[in-house]
Image (cartoon, rainbow, N blue to C red; front, side, top):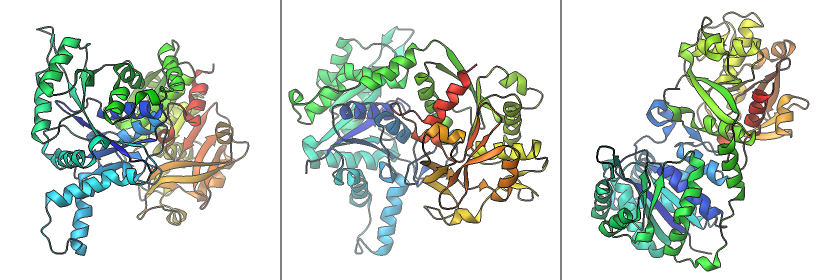
Length: 535
């Protein structure tokens, strides 16, 4: 069996430079050469996972097929590499310490004093190697969250230092830093990068490759200066300047030679390797950048102040728009601010409306108002997770006449609990508790819009929710024109609803956005965008 190569991506100077995009881009370039690649993310926060984090804190909570609540960078990995990630692809400090403490309680350490070194670092290294030990991957690319110098990141950096010595040429370290442009002096400044690399060196790590984030081109003389002061070969100092779209970054980094330098440093002979096959990727980017006509979509949600809160949805809409030769204009509208008096003003010129997922009561009435507007004005509308649930509640209120209809999450005392925690759910949970997490199978009703969209009867989609459509209302809904067109195979829980008499009005209990990738845009989003552009 071939030895697995490990590549680590660290960051310096500032957060939010795009370590995840660089890691995913390198993964894409290596994959395009025929390597079996996966990406993983190590997050330095003490939460066990991001499942309990407010989206304003950390952006969206991504969900893997095996039901792990993960960092949003895993979404980038899946969208770029067109692969599925799992629990092992995302580790937090909380998980590491929890594992070590559990071992200590069981007596696994035989009475020894448990310390950061070697016990915490050994656990980090064990988790880094889980994916590589499977024999399924040639390269594992690990992004270390946070910024070099953060106290939280120290155990991870120390673990990388140890692995560098243990693995030799099978280990590569890429450091991403920021080169600011001082407008007053009209100069790019490399001193922050020098300090960042020096801090990394003080912690025992010499980076092999430097990627310099900047808003302006970095001339060769500045790159040579960085190489000289940071002990890095000039050919291994490359820039990553702002791009029109994140999907151009792999192409930009290919021009910089990131894949060639990385492979050479890991001992590969480039003359024996195929050139990257990026035809489909380039086709997608050209479609996206070449589109001139616009499709206007309103996303109605409660976390719209932070764009990353709905990252997978916005990317899935972008994929679908590009393949329909349209430029996406996404207007994120705070559901709290939508009222019957202003709904026409806010939504009247939109080609389509998407009702976003979320937990809790805030903003619900605004979603109901937006849904009624879309339903009564024949505007294509997609409801995701709680978006589907609000679709059903609005229909019950304004079509079936149940004025007090609600979810028991919002109003435990409602007479008409259209959305509730159902007994049928408890029989099919992948994990403990009452949350449905991860992929579940769904059977589509032949002849329905959902069946037409997917082109098959059996599908599997990812979930992240606690409440379900109440099946005791199912017959009444269908008699009134809202069809339950997708059901869970094992429990008959409703997964998809759609209006028969509407141009395009579909609600899904699952999260289709998690499965949309660059080369395989999700059919639900593609159909939604096509309905939006049809006159």
